[in-house]
Image (tube, rainbow, N blue to C red; front, side, top):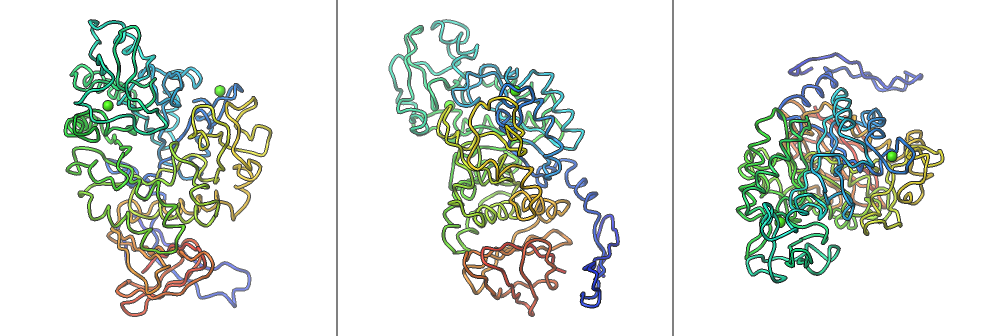
Length: 545
Ligand SMILES: [Ca+2]
Ligand SMILES: [Ca+2]
């Protein structure tokens, strides 16, 4: 028996079946006190490396008052469910007053709460009740633009000489050679310049016309937006998810992550560093990787979403080559500075449901989530992914509404989301994909998530351990290890959806045979090689010692 550092508890593992004669002999070993380990890992500056995040669309999460719109009181009433799933931190989609031209990403007041969702007192209650459960709360910081209904813009558009006349980007003509970009994509329109009849000038907007870009070349805007961040930090939030943060400044050569924007990000980071344990995650606008967002590893973001996996995983899973799933993680390991921690998603409010990316094949979204939850990085589960929510068809704002339908909590009328008429229709097959039904089914997507999250919990190797990806002699078998100073885990994913495989991995140099912790399969040490068996489209985690 090898003695491990930290608190030890001796646990007797046995098959515990009634016919003990057929059971293998019991194995004894020193096991760590996992709840104590989880608490240790989730405390202090590095908590975010070990936390499981969960993106909440408040509007669609839980309606407490029957008006059909989710609200903060509803979210508070679901904290126990989130804790039971294994969630350590929330990322709230924008909860500010908004005309809802872009689902709240058009903010009319940075320092208040959307009346549909509640009031600042409800937000404070959410913070204290989440914190009491050890759940952190990150808010969405949308700084590139405001709503055209924000008081800053109302003033700015009123004349060419008002005190905020230069807080937005105004020109006499629809264009500027020093601004080398248009709208982000067709969703937001073809033209990035809109004539304002009051001021009789054009303003610049990279997203919807109702979202004018702030003019960061004005130092007052820099200060005012940093003050917004300070307002929420002082209120007690644990950090920010920074919306399209690369787009703050424009130049003639481009508008993405230019040096002026990087300088602003360093200022924002310095502000956060004045508070204990606060973190920020970047919505990267670069699908080829996230490495630029970390700066030196200490002066920009704690985390940045790696969309090379996050939004593109459907492609490698449509084929059967293990190396294509591994590539984004190999890239990050090569390119990221020391200290970087990618944010890992398999969906979000901006893309269609994982169910769609998986082409409706269950083993694909389960394996995609398995990789998300076991590769290096901090996982961000988008609400409802743990139920495999289906896409909706009703459009209230734009096409992205397909992934913004109400959460399904029970079999009851309104599926436990509301006693009234939901603000948007439920996704397809709600009778199959609600929490009540899935909780009772050990083979459900929910049960898969819950078990995987509990295996991950309190194991340092997943949040911070080194990654080793090894090629098997069978290209359909994905094999990788995560190791902390005193524990090694092996993950195996079967890319073949029709047949199981047995493969040999040369140079694995495992410290022992594999003990199956999750999924199905077998792992045996054969000298310096490992022999692994995985069922069709299977996933497995082995503890090796
Ligand atoms: Ca409501
Ligand atoms: Ca901008």
